[in-house]
Length: 432
Image (cartoon, rainbow, N blue to C red; front, side, top):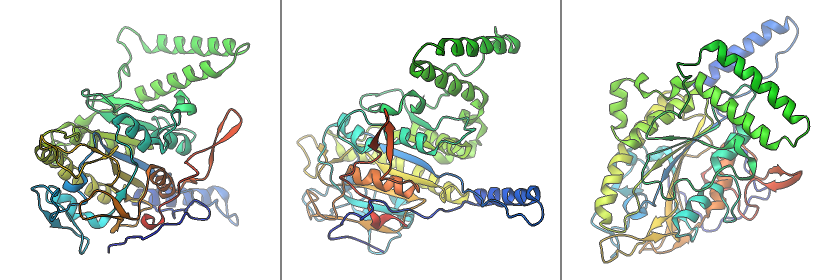
């Protein structure tokens, strides 16, 4: 049902711990693990409680800024409403733009926020703000934070992978691991291709490779005896990451998916990247960001929004159906957001310009209460009139939905640095 707040007060603790949920796969693993533990412990000894698998994050980033009026917050009776009509969704009384018929079908699985107000109208600053929760530069982006907080001994694949197409690059790569260091940098895949140089050269046999690696490790150890280890450790981390990618390079191969599945997701960059994201998350990557480009519609907005929605809508619904059927939705948080929205006013060229004062985003998956539509904009869509949230609130909420303490700290040079902006807080209304 529809849920809107007139005024949100910060949680006294600044954190809402979301209950852990188990996928069918995770439940089976935990059950088998418990059975083995009982056998090893022997009669009369209690087994250690099963540890649930860590949650995962999929960030679908609508790069350039999708128009809220053509997607999640239509204004059909406004002079700025545009030519498209609203349609009914699976949430009673809630409509979305007609360009999202498949998303409308599954809206009851989402939590939609119609009242994002960051005030930011720069692509570069907006990308960084929405991914770091901060305006001050130097903080790690969300994917790097997840890679740090969710890492486990024995992880082979990188904790954070980002997927985009080759061009345009523009503002898509703003932000990185910041003070967390190179160990938590994202591995970037471009045009769906696997990372470069993850196949051993044919001129190098296995024995020679092992000998070289042994010499490398001995050299590192000797070099570290009289030097500050930071740079050496960063190199070693990068080497281990590359070696792991070589061992697991099969997960990047979409040819292992059926032709029917590739067709279901769509023969375009976004479709292929979403299918690859599903493979990566199932294989153990903690966070994947998929960038969907070309939402920046200063000219012919309605043509461009139609094209972008045609790609996004069917692929997103297919991804959500697959996540549900494969048990991934119970352990994966899905975030649909861009760096800004579009102006309600239509410009001279039939476009909508940059707008950070009143726009929309959505959540789905673990830790999220489905069927919620939070916040409200005025009749023209020019300002938020109920339940405003900012980028810091979204950052807190993502951590809370992942079962992480958003009030915790990073240790930087022996000093505490808050993981999320202390001036912001969790959006409790969308959490389960």
